[in-house]
Image (cartoon, rainbow, N blue to C red; front, side, top):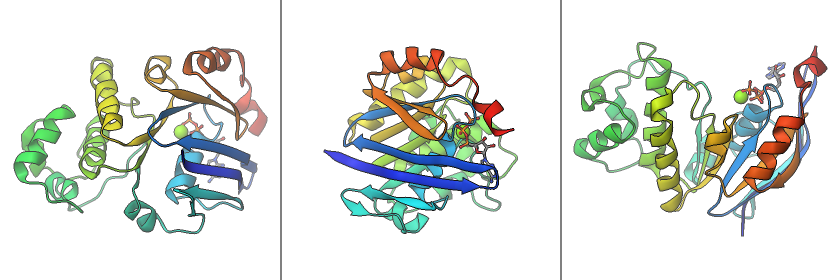
Amino acid sequence: MILLSLKHIIVKKERGKILDRLSLNVNKGEIHAIIGTNGVGKTTLANVIMGLEKVSNGRIKFQNKDITNLSVSKRAKIGIKILQQNPPSFEGIKIREYLKVGNELSIKDIKRILKKVGLPEEYSERFLDDTLSGGERKRVEIASILTSNPKLAILDEPDSGIDMLSISDLKKIIKELNKEGTTILLITHRGEIAKIADVASLMCNGKIKKTGNPKEISSLFKKECKNELRRRV
Ligand SMILES: Nc1ncnc2c1ncn2[C@@H]1O[C@H](COP(=O)(O)OP(=O)(O)OP(=O)(O)O)[C@@H](O)[C@H]1O
Ligand SMILES: [Mg+2]
């Protein structure tokens, strides 16, 4: 069953089309990896699904309903959640307050989730501002996804900024989240992470070039889309 479907999506910027008639289907329950070199439009795609980026053409459907013109907050309400490649910081909000938005979690639950993402429980009292390191900020966002049990989690390079030692923990967390019923769109450069996916799509030139099994797509990735950045200069 298709959970998310994008059809003929176009995003235009001054230099031309960032997404160029991109179409993609994500089935309910799967971990779907998106693989592609720097600058092919992966983050733009993630933002389009979350509603952070406007499309100039094309339709987005979620659970068979057209969400193309839905606001970010409405998309969040129907169960779409994003882990941004570079999560923004928020002044004046404590981590425990942030993680409690929209749920009934106790401080004990919050501390348990912080531990799961490798943060000390005392971090519940820290502010979500730029005193947190990039990797710490990313861990808080992963914790936030765990507390909200979304229907769809878009993870934009969840491994970037996270040290090597925790990659296996990260894979475990993603698999667990998926087992609990969250469909996952997993944007990554790392073959090792893509391995946990059920299906993968190769992205080149603002389009999905091929969807298939992650092993096959990873090997195609190594051969194709080499000159993406040169194209835009
Ligand atoms: N506001 C903008 N104006 C002009 N170009 C933009 C803008 N935003 C993004 N781009 C360009 O669009 C392209 C796609 O950017 P995007 O961030 O989606 O790439 P990506 O696939 O996520 O790359 P990476 O692997 O480096 O994260 C890039 O070439 C980028 O420079
Ligand atoms: Mg990106």
